[in-house]
Amino acid sequence: MVMSGRPEKMFDADFRSALKYLAGEKVSLAPSLLFAFSDVTRGELQEFAEVWQTLPTDRRTRISQAMMELAEERIEADFTRIFRYLLDDEDAPVRVNAINGLWEDEDPALIRQFIGALRSDPDAQVRAAAAEGLGRFLLLSETKRIPASDGDEIQTALLAVIRNGGEDRLVRRRAMEAIAYVGDETVRNIVAAAYADDDAKMRASAIFAMGRSADPYWKRTVAQELYSPDPQIRFEAARAVGELEFKAAVPRLIELADDPDREVSSAAITSLGLIGGKLARQALTTIIDGEDEVAREIAQDALDELEFASGSNMLLVDIGLESEEEALLAEELEDLDDEFQQEDDEPRDLLDDGGLSPRRRR
Image (cartoon, rainbow, N blue to C red; front, side, top):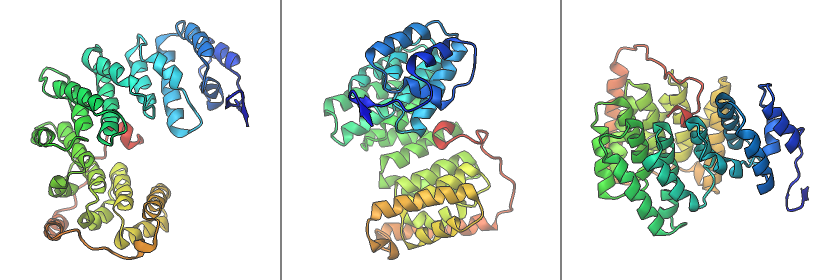
């Protein structure tokens, strides 16, 4: 049902009751409460702001975090006006949550705000979130959904951060990941330099950027890292080969579907769905028939995505490798696999961010 041009609020708490609850001392932030703040009017936003300014820091952080997570989980949760208001909050964690909460907002007006935050926000986490947010708009520019001039402005801001040796490394990593959508020689050199860095997190970001770039140049590098002893590197490599649609990596991805690290195995399963082909489909079907409930759910999502992307019976036919170069890469991977199988089975450390989604883990 629709009333007065906006969705009817079908949940337990109405707007003003929810405001009173926020101002109280209770700590529960159930979806039934938060939905009262979805799709607020300008007048309601003003009332929200008056109450918001009276709340203690930790409560504002918790509320903004809960709203961001609910917006990710439920398509009908729309906190756009609130998140835009929170971009100027005095607390850095709230500003981070606001930027992340606007991940579906494609209004180019946000570009200037994100660039401003990237250049001058005193908190590194906020600057990093702003860099990540700008990557989304850079993709819109690359796909001609916003003017090229906007993309140029974003690139200039990101390059300045990447080349600033005094900037926090997390911010530089996120800026490099964001600019990876631009597949030119300058960006390739930036990614190569990051990959050669001694810092494992910088190298992981470089591998992430390789996948995001969709540049076939990186296929060999990424595929080799599927055998890394570092689970963070394996995780990023498993994601990247899927984005690069590297068919020769499918056998190794099938092995990684049983990786002892849950995040690595999840990434491998998802990438099987991105790459497709008969072998990948068979592997996903086997996982769906297995006993691991988490793996089954991820595999079903991957198979659904694969079928949606295909839209035909071509899934039943292997289309072969793309080129002679890919055939050679496949042989290299087979050699790597032989070497890997001969190594002693040593326990590997799990990622220290257990339970977090891949997006949050990074």
